[in-house]
Image (cartoon, rainbow, N blue to C red):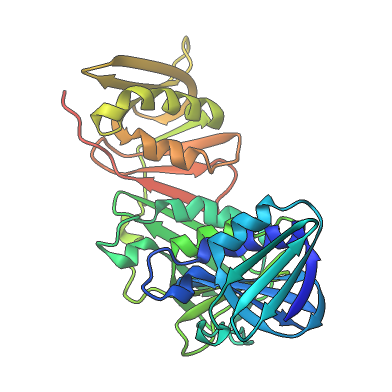
Length: 377
């Protein structure tokens, strides 16, 4: 293999694939990145056996070939190089990659590419086109609610359902639930329901460039995988086996109080409450008071710590219904408010022991359910 490419492009490509590199595997080749010539371009791939990320960069190919080299070594070296042409040459007998750039030369010991796991290719089965920006927003509004520990593996994933002309995602860790819907430009030929690891979706959102208009999603039959194709990037992830809990019964069908607040003000009040709530299991109280002829409605967010003190923030609100005081995990509240991009947000509540529902005002495609915390009187 003999290839040359720009340092900028190689550094960017390695940055895209490097997060898929395995750090704990007993297979040494999984700590490596695959470099291979592919139709006049240089292909980079990395995998931890759960996800595979592949990226193609422009290159001048003088000699075809492929190898794998330690990802961290190559990544650190390339990022330290000047912005110049990088020349790569492989000694296939010793699997040593010679790298030259400006006045720098290095030799990196590699492992034969034949030992690298096979990189899956996408087919045309169950293929859907989704706008990149809309998909990134969808992931941002849902994936954070997935569980982060593996006690219940299904909850570390995001339920993704393709049905007719809609895609719906849902995630829960047992304390909160995010649901987001998105219209598809082309109806699904058949209903498909899968559980995609939240980690893989977050990685997709990270590498999806806003310059890329669409993401193509493919679910090849019988392979228990989902493939995301972007311009010059492909991410493949294994699906999670198991039944995702039926979340529909959890979604409240009515409310006693609807409180409309300024999103930024509510987020700021929660952020301040979090300072004192940290030592009290992140518990903060939200008290809602309807307005009258003399006074407008308001919500007050209060947090108390026996060690550090307390604070209360009051913000204006339009309240439809009765007064209520309810306690929430304010850290969770801050997280959901950070992914709501409408000027106003609605908090719908029934009573202090029932879940609250957050909805962006003017956007019916997203809702977030948050369980109440217990607090003493």
